[in-house]
Length: 230
Image 1: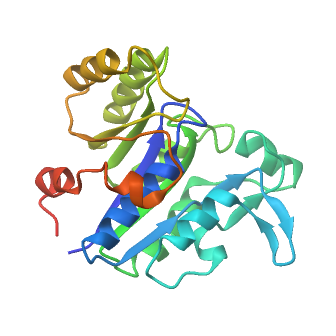
Image 2 (image 1 turned 60 degrees about the horizontal axis):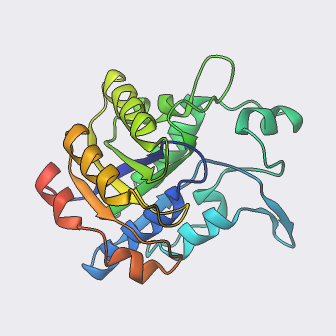
């Protein structure tokens, strides 16, 4: 049985890609087929093959399903700014329905585990009336929230969880990350969020870019128990 998750964060730079890649690697370690989509990526660099985004390339490397770069990242934008600003500079308009349709084309490949990575946080705008949350709402997929354990994460984590649930989606789990490095109050903040978020803690990840190491800190069984998949 295949399953898919929308990966969001409390902010930009909290390690969504690291968590998404680690989740895919954890799936591979269990013998699952994997796929990924990052529908919009800003901050891309020009290469001989066109605009490329490092995060999308990391996701591609963690897919066992053969996917072209364009399947993983259909909207590659050069300016490293908010996606709707970057799109406007290139004469493009981002639409939730169009992006959800592309994501669905990858979901239709029926990999055992597919991750869809958003940009920034839950309410990052796509245009003047839609946000990235609208993509997840159209797809009706459960959400995994990435929280960088640092000063301010309690408020950001709780507000994000509230918004996800208010949009009618399942917050199937959250991941504690150390994207900003170690924090002296890590244990206290972790315990506080764990008691308040009312969903499984899927992992407490160290500050690392090694996907095998990160995957070892993820508890995929929590997803199995939460949704009854695999």
